[in-house]
Length: 177
Image 1 (cartoon, rainbow, N blue to C red):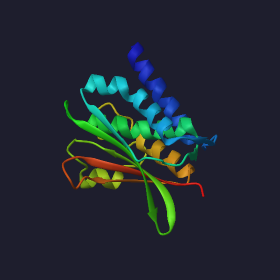
Image 2: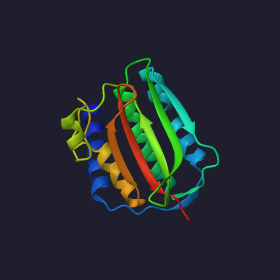
Image 3: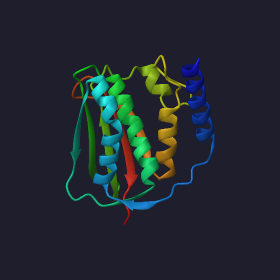
Image 4: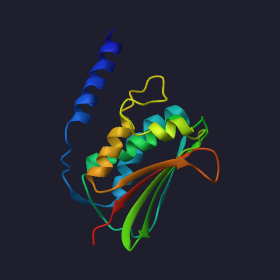
């Protein structure tokens, strides 16, 4: 009973958080510090799932103007999903690099899992609230993540990996001029 009450309480809190407009408290944040926070927060789940996290960070990335708590949560949601999709012994990659697209400087975060990938049906519904492929999922994680990314002027994309089995989630954020 206590466990079910706790689960319902968490769901209600997530619903309230999802319904509230976000007000990012922006600060200049080093990409490395952001990745450190994500890796630390994901550590217990990685150990429990027997999945390894590979971190790849391009050198000399500029600082981001983001809400560090919100951005950590967004990236952590993607890493947690990747860990849950990967089999024991699998690898999740967390990549940060710079890219230029249409004369715009951007920072690209990629989260790659070693799971079975995304079905066409799942890809079509991924960012909808309450859509989940997990037996114990609520279907709010990716919707909240997309909301956080959009509040920071960014975009969130998902597709299957081309190099091997698994999914690839990309967060594209504008870099300050």
